[in-house]
Length: 172
Image (cartoon, rainbow, N blue to C red; front, side, top):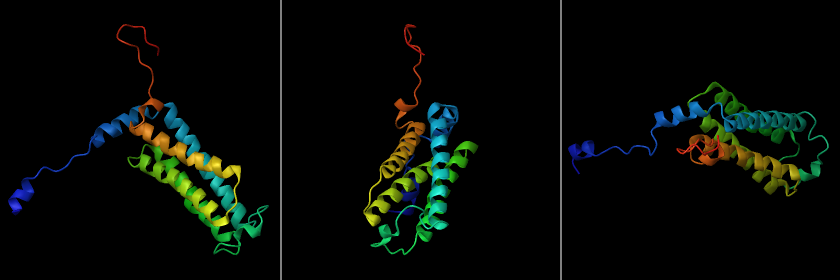
């Protein structure tokens, strides 16, 4: 293939133009999904920071050190720091970016939700203990990702408002 043939080849375009996604996102920024995502992110950040402090400062508090027996950790210091800084930090970054309307805010929110899910998965795999809180926090990550998809318009039923039908019989 010659250089001229390569340069004349069409450049693939995204399925949904970025300008349309960002404009759509800005319109939805007052939606219930946007507010719910913001609340979940701030909650995730606060609880991750609290759990991180419990691990780093109080060496796990009421959580037995025996849980760490088959892990590379001898105390809860490093896991606490990882929980507070990495998981809590991405949750907070997502919340702040979303609140400011940053162009990459939904990416940060997706990273935060996925990070929460990965944290719980690795925690269960390493300590081989289960608590209902792990299900709640895994569900938090799943819900954050679902809300990101809804705000992107991929799962519009979550954020769609009922609009009046053309005959005037629809609900609002």
